[in-house]
Length: 312
Image 1 (tube, rainbow, N blue to C red):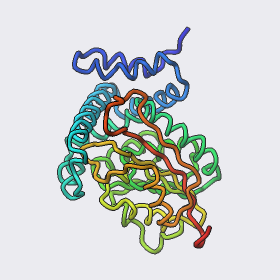
Image 2: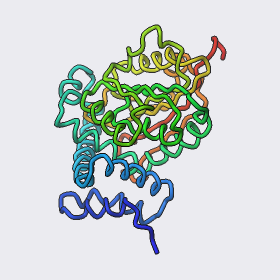
Image 3: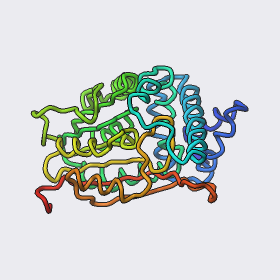
């Protein structure tokens, strides 16, 4: 007898509305394929959302995901035509996106669902667990900084795998910070994770420099005019040889994407210039993509070590 995974219930909810049905197909295919990493991740995240959002969880998640994917598809089409991202100014994006509470409400949960609904993002989550959490995050009492924490997923996953972590997470969006804080309390992480509304490029005074064992920054670099500044602040906050997990998007347009990474070598170079050694990286793309498109949207993860000295 098949286990009644939560993801099956979520797909059924998407299928109930004609306008939502097309967005269920990709997730339904993953369910049919039965990939264990996908099933385990979706079970975990859907369970957390249900615990926090209550009986309306699937409605909120579905509406957010549909709005998010619609925006992503629209932005990518415009990118194909124009040959460049629509926005390049952070202040304009902040006004229209991050400080727009209604937009951020959908955006917040849309990004949350994409973590398990997009096959290439499932691969990054698997990479995060196996090659970062399992290798570097198992000691007791490690201090972690999460720069650009968004919905808090990566902090929640970290605390789930090692409850003893002391995590400082920050995001510039008041809506995301408030949601993540409330969800942290609901999931019992209020003592382990502290969310702050702050600028990831500047947060942490001199007293915090070199005090963190681990760093996380997921899908923030492409939202910045100068993403190298993010890596520089991460390096400043970490202890020598401290480890970091960083993800970003390449040639993948969204309404708030500003910096257009075209080659995997570009973020690697920025990381090295900021004071990191690149231990490994993984670049993944959606399994289904029009081969005639000019741009292949990819997501990339880097595992970095804070260099000690000019050579190491």
